[in-house]
Image 1 (cartoon, rainbow, N blue to C red):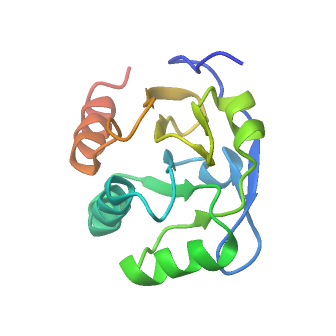
Image 2 (cartoon, helix red, strand yellow):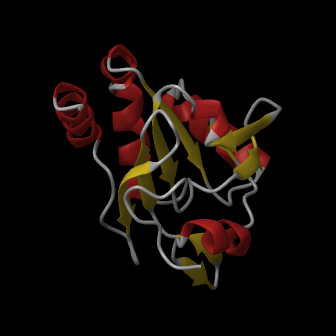
Length: 159
């Protein structure tokens, strides 16, 4: 599938969640601005910094009516360790099938070892894509302060 574009409905995607259950996007974000962070893996320093920054911004994002979810190909134990290390308060998915996620979102896949490149989406409360950020390598990703500013702007300029 090609990349997702602004105004498109975010496709249905479900992955196992750290702590049990699953994360279903866009359903779990319905009625809120949604931030979907696909990260390369717990080994990636840029991903660690991004996830920690969204965790620090969680109160500000909640005040704006935004919810965050993150996911990667990491196994359950690895993802659980990452959540504990950074005290992540938002749902984190694990064991994602890189090619299935790429097929529905357009995310880039690294084949050896197999993982998803950093990809981020900001969704409207109805599940449509407002922003899509695709990286083909280590850098280039959503930043918490930028997302908060964008959501503020969007809410202030709503029709």
